[in-house]
View 1 (cartoon, rainbow, N blue to C red):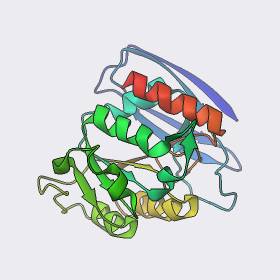
View 2 (view 1 turned 90 degrees about the horizontal axis):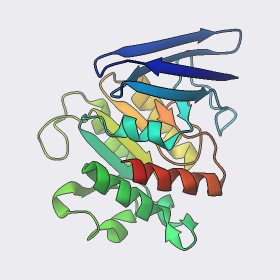
View 3 (view 1 turned 120 degrees about the horizontal axis):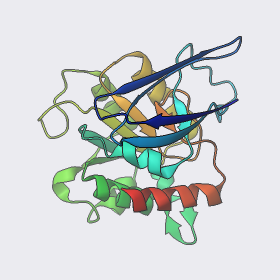
Length: 219
């Protein structure tokens, strides 16, 4: 199923909502757009995990890196959670972790590493923007609307994830979708995650590499 939407003369404060209902699917998409003119391709991609049933509300997949860049450049307080799988995935000798580090630098956001990723990332991200914690622990804190963030200055409004085992991060995204309403979630691994507000469409490695490179260019 494919939908093509053209949005013209929508200002930063405008919201656009799509509600699509048929026998098999109910999708609600909320977009807050900064640009005056934007085209968005929305594809209801099947979840990478076939048994991942998200319930009546699910996020959407983003094909266009320019569109993803516009979402990420929102002025919300952000946290990028980088997992250790990003150290095992490589494109032409360049670790996926390095792509994520470039994205975090462009966004000038806080970075939290899980597993053994901290040792690799340390020195590439400023110390005052880098923390280390397990995925389970940071998930519990992100759900708590009264948590003041890693810097003690307030809860995050956007959480970006990358470099995680697919079934592990799926459970994190499910909890964040169902037990809080203050946080927007983005997943930058190549898999489609219906519990993330925005994720990618089960890319091949080559398409994922191209997406990440163009995303960095547009940030």
